Length: 443
Image (tube, rainbow, N blue to C red):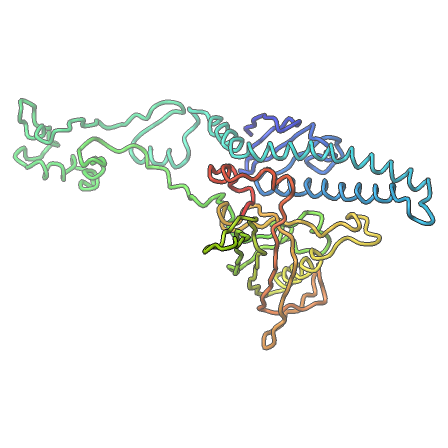
């Protein structure tokens, strides 16, 4: 298996192309990592399947973790510095809170180092894939044994070939390119005829006889190369065409969800895709606008306008879902469950998520990097219909059992772009025009 080594931020990364064509990575010193390629506890080790979506999900996850810890620190400092509370906080509680703040600040630095490594890997992704594919291609020995197809083709033409040796034909090859030479003109001898043939036969008749073979016409055609000249038997049969769609990028509309929300009961199809996939082409609309203020000078015939700001509106996303069996019913129920969960904040005694933090930021993909590619969004509303006049399928299996789903319905989301402060600072019109922001999620 070919491998290449590189660096990503503070991490040393090994990229490997597996026999099944997938590309994996392993980083023994990834900042803050505490798991290995098989989920075993290996401090500082990170690894797994490497693709652009997994990189973007990891970037999103680290950004969200930093944001959550900053919110925790802000809330903790409000409590620590609150001198108006009556009765005041217990001193032991404040001491513990200060310790947690210090830990959170340390965690932020570690996560920043991890985020720096992911961003570095994101920028190198295309180059690394090209390099490992080139290493894979270069790793094939030039003199490897013939494939079965090549052997069969060679045997059909009376050709024998040893591994690593050029092909040798068992019949004499005619190399003349001038058709007049076959007529004995310009001092060249006419071609010999097969035994028992009439030397007065025309060239075409002689070629059709093909030396007395069982298939003279086939013999003749076999000697014609792509230029229409008689130039000996062809080489081995060409390799079959390679499909161009193998490994093509998924252009469907997908709402990528943080892995932590893909918990128990969620359909494995959604877990595998990393989010909600719209099975039919959805309706999507949004608009961008530039806002201008105005001034009306005294005794002036014209209003003066001045630029205030630009904005991107909310994105409406509405698509049809159909259900024909229990598996698809589980998918539909999973989407509904996620729509409800992703519009709520962690609260109260939540331990998996930071209580009081906002609902998560998702990533919208669809139709390629110049339409929707890695767009950070939050769900402001979620709606689905339960129409009358349609059948409902009962789901009794795993996941959301003992529930029913309509065979056809429409599910809608209203999304708002959620660019972080860093993303806003990183934006530039010159970068936009030069293509440096392609696939970065800017609308």
